[in-house]
Image (tube, rainbow, N blue to C red; front, side, top):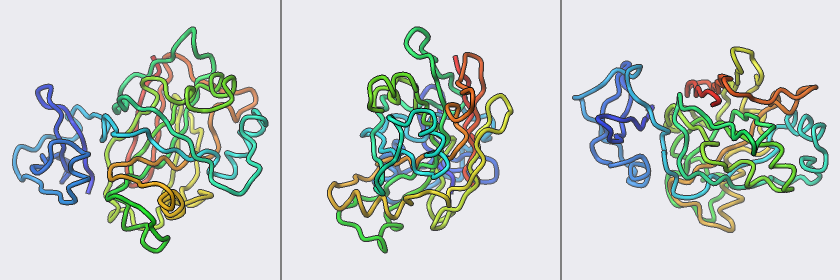
Amino acid sequence: MKLYTYLLDGIEHVGAEMDGYIYPVTNAADMLSLIRGGEICVSSENGIKKDKAALCAPIPRPAQDVICLGINYVEHGKEAAQYNKEAFLRERPYAIYFSKRVTEAAAPEAEINSYPGLVTKLDYECELAFIIGKDAKNVSREEAPEYIFGYTIINDISARDLQTDHKQWYFGKSLDGFTPMGPCIVTADEIGYPPKLDIRSYINGELRQNSSTEYMVFDPVHIISELSSGMTLKAGTIIATGTPAGVGMGFDPPKFLKSGDEVICEIEKIGRLVNRIK
């Protein structure tokens, strides 16, 4: 099932897609309460055409920072180390975790602030994200798939100059608007496990990233099992699984984003997340 957050008369609603229409979910005020409730009740009335809906990010205001994986595709690791070895070289066989502050996730079709005067090296990262469906603590690898509510797309917008100058990634990835998300959450039963999905990005129509999520170094099962061994992953937690090769800093010379650029992040079975740089 594809689940959306959308605006109707200025009010956010949660809906499910059926036959090209989005119908309201009747048992939840927002996506987070729907995830935590564990049941999806959909009305058969008051549907609106999907292409006419004013979509928000599926989880517009995450309850906590988004958990992110760094350098989680081998080829992206190579291009990142080539750009800045000190900042990005992976030296140990462990997952790299960091967090991304999200006051409000940017909607599909939203403009992304380029922060002129603050940011000079603006980059994109198309990523598969998964959402925890129930509180997870000390979860085994065998049990881990049961804790995945669904999947969405995140564009991990990154200010490479802030990221490298500060020698940590939090500020350069957490500016307001730097987390476009959507267009929907696809429930885990429609994706299956493991998620082997084509993942691509386009800048002004040019194909930049073209890979598959099966090439992740650390998959969702590993991530859930490892993190839950020492921390509780609350229902609604969003985890972004990293990006494949083809980001702007990976080119010679780099191809950073500029005002007016259109960025499309596309993942099989989920859809397209489209944003423009302001």
